[in-house]
Amino acid sequence: MATPDEFDVTVETPREGTIVVHITGDLDLATAPRVDDALSSPAAAHVVIDLAGCTFLDSSGVRVLVEAVRDAPERGRRVSLVATDTGIRRVLEITGVDTMVPVHSSVEEAL
Image (cartoon, rainbow, N blue to C red; front, side):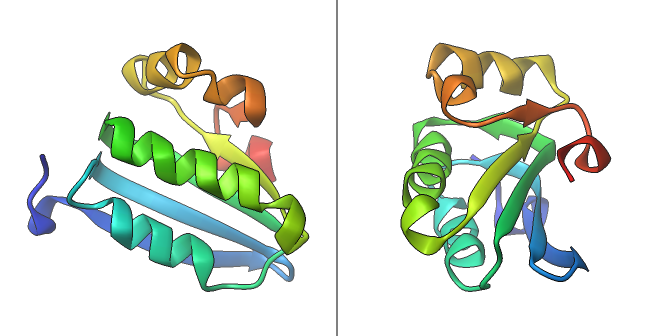
């Protein structure tokens, strides 16, 4: 698991109605609540979850992603993921997350 110094989650607004949540480091049991907080607070019609800086993804991280995708329609949102690491992409495939939400190779592509 990542220590708090190795993990970061930042939110940017590249344009009105869109946020990009950048995740750096391990998305695991210790850090999933911070991602959940970042995803639940801002109002946006399109949420891009950028996993390009994510180095590890466990079941707690997958849970946060799935909840964001499942809650999106009732919040009037659509969600896109960005994943560049083959290991992270493999976790998304194994868990079926990639069938629930589009997975892109870059933030620009997701936007």
